[in-house]
Length: 75
Ligand SMILES: [Zn+2]
Ligand SMILES: [Zn+2]
Image 1 (cartoon, rainbow, N blue to C red):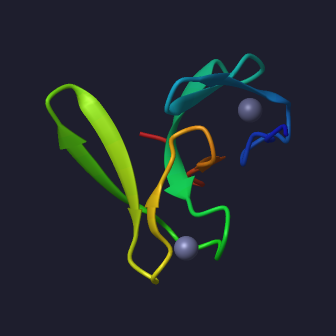
Image 2 (image 1 turned 90 degrees about the horizontal axis):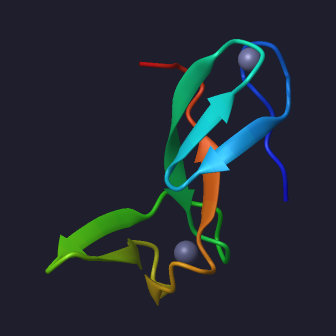
């Protein structure tokens, strides 16, 4: 799976929950997406662990299954 920069379409480098564009030298926040329904996941942080919860009824999603997409606007 690869993502492309929303600004220049260059291939993005995944860095945990962020994406980096070597062409723009910009960092993009990543959005957690449910692999089952494609909707945004709620991120639950507890005791150093992160859980992802689908509000559409798919329940808790394992971090390994979560799909990360770059947000179109950079910060
Ligand atoms: Zn770029
Ligand atoms: Zn879902």
